[in-house]
Image 1 (cartoon, protein in one colour):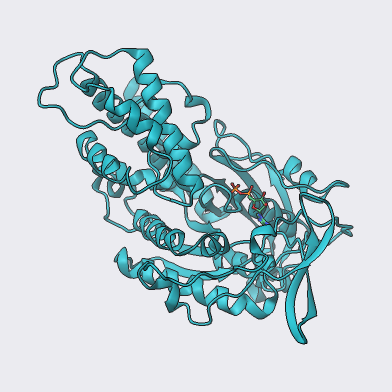
Image 2 (image 1 turned 180 degrees about the horizontal axis):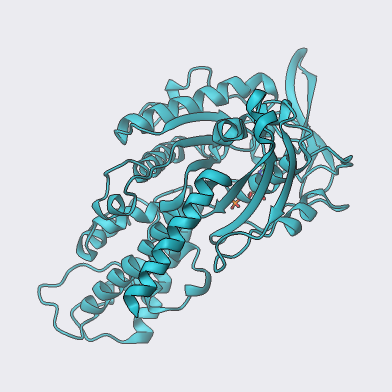
Length: 469
Ligand code: GDP
């Protein structure tokens, strides 16, 4: 009967967790970041470098020769799409190198490492296998956690209140002005309203705004066109009769919470042990003070999602579990000569301290650093008006030509980026940064050589190096 089945399932679950804990440990590594932050490139290069182990001196287990083998295996979750590693690697390292397709939804990849523990223990027990389950998911989905704390009426009010200050909302506002929330629902009208709202979210995101909920409107996957993604914020009318537009929007919003947001947190988020959050900090700094201010808000929100006890429903899912380490990594550091890397690191650390303070975050170990998962440039110092100028050289995407460019300067004191946005707030990375669209460099990799990167090994050491010793 049901009870016996349940007992069997319980025993099986205990059995598998025992074997995972004592025999073959599993590290679930979450990789997130907003769209275009660099998740796909990060995972591809990390896995390739771990499989080759040739360029990972700062990953102590790799440097010590303790990793005897690294190989891909079928992942444990049968219904999650597999991260398309082989095709992405082919894109980056093939004869005609190009950037791979970006993350659109959650995906997973299992890399298994055969590790010989250091010292006496290693000679007694022999090598053991550690599974690294990499879970790639859009940062936009993480920001949806805040929706669980809001009713449809509250979310609508907040969303409508910031329409004016953001670009691209005209078409949606026009539709809204022709909409009576108390009138009877008509599906084609709802679809047009929702499409205009989605268009606005895309425009706000493109203009550098991070908080553009509901996140699934931006990356719908196979839910595109379904009722859970066909709603929009509305002002609450005095009366909300049965069958009215407002009632149905309220119902769909709740369905979105229940059928989209909660399953993601339950099935993916709640099971993560270690997390890396990738951030296109250079892009935000180049875009200007408003984008930096918005990035700060997004980092606070993201860290808040990991704060124990923030959300009662999430807390009940996480009983006894929590993310142990969180890394905030500024990606694409290969746009800068190394003479500016210390500044980028200092900026990331200041942003992270600020986010920790604002999110009132304690618990997990956090770190911030500057990396490039795939180095597309080489450094070159040129003379400009009699002065040396630290440039980077690479192949331009548009023309296929080589160019040595100077991105401009980062502030020496990160505090200037944390000042409130003012009329005259200073701008940075104003030289060639806006034309720095490099293609991946053509590579000739020898066996035992992973793709070139900047500090990917240091990121790996922080994220899971301790579990390989
Ligand atoms: P995702 O949306 O987070 O999966 O982002 P991707 O990994 O697809 O990266 C988005 C884009 O950022 C790529 O197409 C590249 O143009 C750029 N990019 C990502 N990582 C690097 C890097 O390490 N170096 C450079 N130069 N560009 C990068």
